[in-house]
Image (cartoon, rainbow, N blue to C red; front, top):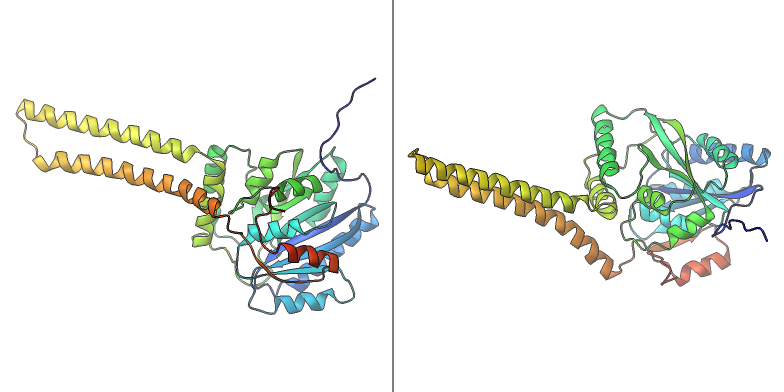
Length: 353
C-alpha cells in the first residue's frame, strides 16, 4: 500500500471559509465606524469571490473610557456580526489579541490594530496569498513604508528588530507587525501556550508551519493619538520582558562576555600600575582602587540587571496570575457566554482549560 504524508491538526477546508476578525482597541471612538465599514466592504468582496462564507468581528475593549463600546453596539444593529469582550482593566494588546483568538469560531482569523494605520483592503492580498499557497497557516504583513511616523521612531524600531533578529532563537520577519492571518490549527496551538507576557510576533513565528508574507504601505492614523509612544514604559517593557527575554538567551551570554572583558581590562590596568611602581613611575594610589571598583561594579550591575529580568519572568510564571480578566461580553450566543463564564481569565493552557 502506498504511504502518504498526513497533516496533524485542523486544516483550513479548501472551500469558502469563516473568517474571525480580531481587534484590540482602547479609546477609538473616532475610528471604529470607518474601520467597520471598510472591513465589511472588503469581506463582502471576498464573499462574492467565493473565498469567505461568513465572518465575525471580535472587538476586545482594553478598558476604554470614551464611547467606543456604545458605537460598536450601534454598528452591530442590522448586521449581527459584532462581538465585544470588555476587559476588567487595561491589560495590553497581546493579552487582548490572545483573548479574541481564544473565543473566535472561524476556520481562520486575522488580527490587526483598530487605528486604521493598517488598511483593511490588505485583507484581500492576505487571503489571496493563503488561497494560492499550499497548506499556508500564517500570512504576515510586512510594512515597506510607514506614513506619519517620526524618523527617530523609525530608526529605533529598526534597531529593535535588528537586535531581536540577531539574538532571538526564532526567525522573525523584519518589520512584520501585529496584522496577521492565522489558520485554526495555529490558533489552537497558540491557545495552549501559557505565557504571562505574550509577544505575539515571536509566538506566531515560534509555532512554525508554512508561513508566507505580503508587503504593504502603512498609513497614518485615521484619527486620534498613538497609544504607544516609542519611549513609553509599556513599549520598553514589551521589548525587554516580552520579546528579548522570552525568545533569547543572548543577554545571558553577553553578561559572560562583558564579565570576561571587564576581567581582562581590570587585569591589564592592575598589571600596568604594578609595572609603573616597579619602574619608579608615580601614579596615585587611589587610581588602582577606583579602577577595580569601577570595572567590577559595572560588570556586577549589568549581570544582576539581566539575570533579574529572567528571574522576574520565572517569578511571574510561578504565581500563575492570569494575564487578562473579562468583565462583560456582548454579541455572543448563550452557549458561548456560558463557556466564558466558566473561565473568564487568561493564560489558557492545555492543563487548565
